[in-house]
Image (cartoon, rainbow, N blue to C red; front, side, top):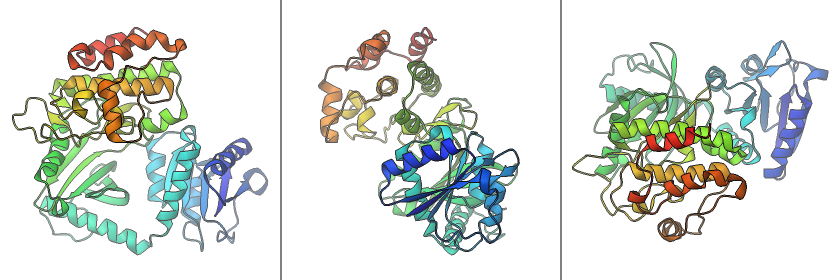
Length: 416
């Protein structure tokens, strides 16, 4: 594989080269010297390259996105990953609209993340224009069915959204980047194919993801703009996060002051969802997202539930969630409440402070066993001032745990 890097910083090009070589084998990295060569000529030969890393701002005058727009239809132009030192949502969305395979802020780069992006960009390049057009056409038809309108074919105007690109796919759902027609707002559309769902509880859970959060207006919780459902499809239109998730940042390593600030903001989000009787049930770094202004929000409430619901669709005895962050009572299949989310936040805080998870095991069953029976881990001596908080969050029984997010906020803010 041959990778071309166009960036106006020789130091950054060198760093990118080190990171790529660390994770990827059998690659050749070519550094394009922007200062010496300037803008590539119109007849530049792009065909030798499999991937292009392109900086958004090149020197004081050149715009990488204008280059992308100009060169993207040239023969052999490679799938492009846009680099930027800015976290603006506009740059991320415009990059994708112009055909970029991906986008990353330079402060978020790390070897593993770059390797994943190269792999995804390679897969992206294998999809023909027709494949991508078919995906967007199908998505338009799905949302049109939800809206029960079929008047203006293929424009997207009658459904209120213009589809840009599919950005994710699961076993029964697909996620699209889209633009809301009325105000040009970038949104993420999550679409569930109900014809492939065999369990009614999963459908109910999808509905809950929208209904529980749509009425909540909080800077610490994902905003849901619209949702709908028919016998065949369901969808949720939610806000777009251009700065990625906490998982990426945790892997880079954080100082303890930043870790405490992040934990405080997560606690604010929990306080607000708990106030409307919602338990997240799957709190983990990958479900904590960052906006373009670097504010964070809780997201992905797919297995959340009403605390006071008579009929619990998740069923006592059925284990849902992610084992690394699962409370002992959730791992046992018992009923959970807000204190289960506080346990999960305790796991996250320990990981943010130390760079490691409190418990590790080869199997999910062994991991759950440790959450239930293993001693609460000790922080390194240099972080011992936070041990009481960890002990209070990771207590094995809910009654011995911190009882509310508000109580945790007070403890965390005392360190700020």
